[in-house]
Image (tube, rainbow, N blue to C red; front, side, top):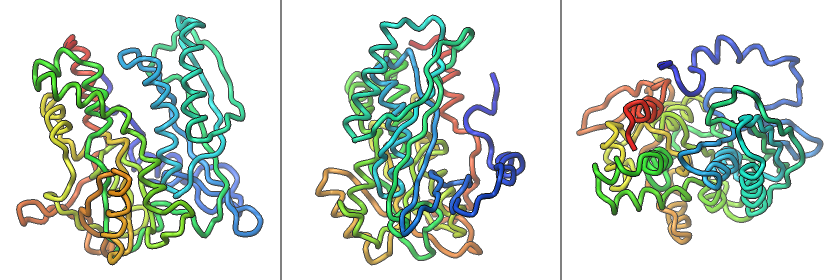
Length: 351
């Protein structure tokens, strides 16, 4: 098994891609960057075009509806970090040759439904069936939105002194997918109740509502300075990425990190640390310190759990985790442990 599963490592991104992005156009105000979920292109006036791309999911062990959900919402989570919902979508589908037209119709109907639900217009793409395509990745997509540049939040805009908030729980998506992929194992290891609750949490893996609630219906709460979607590397990885992208350090209080009982049990069954596992559905929010309680209360009114876990500080102070009153330097984990756990269970024949 390839031990470097998941996204390209940070140092290789900097070495291979960062300085090799085609022609340098002056209107591209935010291009590819470590820890930044979207790109931004300046338009006339105060307007800007925000774009984000991600793989599309087709995971047999989850099902067609669930795969379509991930395909739409994992991209939408990235766009949500701007404080705006996605408006337009392009989908490139490279499907297995064995994938039936009937299954494709079901899958695409769900893509359409989930896009319509959050008001995304599908504007184009490509659809084909490919021999030898046996991946759980079915292609890729791009979401686009147009918004006032002055109101866009992106992770690189976070400021030293900002409070760091995290919504929901660590390891939300990884625990849900593991439970749904290995139901017998999870039931045997943690019990039927935890298994069912983990499966139910699958549809909490959208953080669009978290972001829109944090900034307000008209993006009026400018005390929220930046947001970052929790994906590979989990909550700890997302905070590290936000701090790095914005040129800051961070102080994280370990006892404040939200780890729900369900996620803790499932992760333990797979020998995973939930703080560092893929956690789509959670959002890291940076806001002015004095506005922290207000943001938390606003989310609570919408039944979205949110806690303050630390703050950003000067870059010179580094990125540190306070655990049992001891400060430890945070090391960025380039390969999310979820991947190894998933394929190890698959290889072992766990059901």
